[in-house]
Image (cartoon, rainbow, N blue to C red; front, side, top):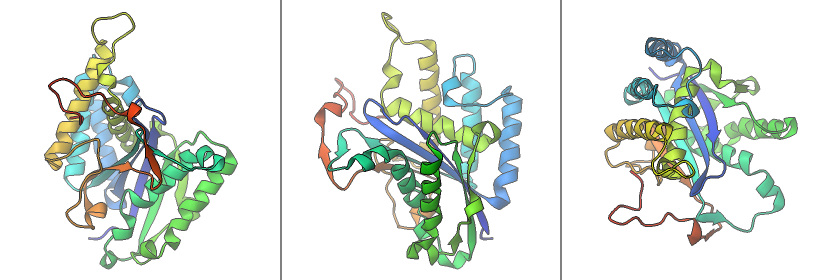
Length: 288
């Protein structure tokens, strides 16, 4: 049965990384599945001994295996077709040029708008699925009320896009709201995936404490959780590469694919070689 309503949780992370920046993520669920998936993931959290909010910043050696178990539960729902996840980011070596001061100052919301508009392929939802309501939840914005109000107006305007409108998707003003991730397990699981991608793409898995010869235990634990996430993605998409946009066999995949990455590349850009990763001896340049 086609869904009559979808719920989309959105979050962002690391606006400025060593090699990659402006990480945005979203997880979409049909309203008919929302409560079941939420109850299942909350029960998994409780079974694993998580009694507060789970998030990438809390990953530690002690809780490493518990985080991996929760991630496996999350990806079971993705692989089962009940959730769809999208991650977007920019590459520092491909920098936008010719931007005005106003455009630079509004980068946060401009990129967020592009993510909301394009990452889930709203324009490519099958028309025959009929009218559908879209509810968008954004993690609390670190911006002024005026900027947030303007952004909400842009999101509301998505339904005016002729290609979105023809699919039957509708967005109501009350369906664009902020939330606290502490209250939503889906957003917490998304935070783990989003954080892990910035961690690996920016080579944080190689970092060592000042003066130390070895990496810290928390860094090693985070790498293990990242590898578990990567393995789950590869089980869905065997040829997946985290540092580039995920390919599609047909345009409808932008809507239907369970998991995709989008490397956002500005139309007007300049190449900055100093922000590329150094080639490691005997190893690939692309992250795995």
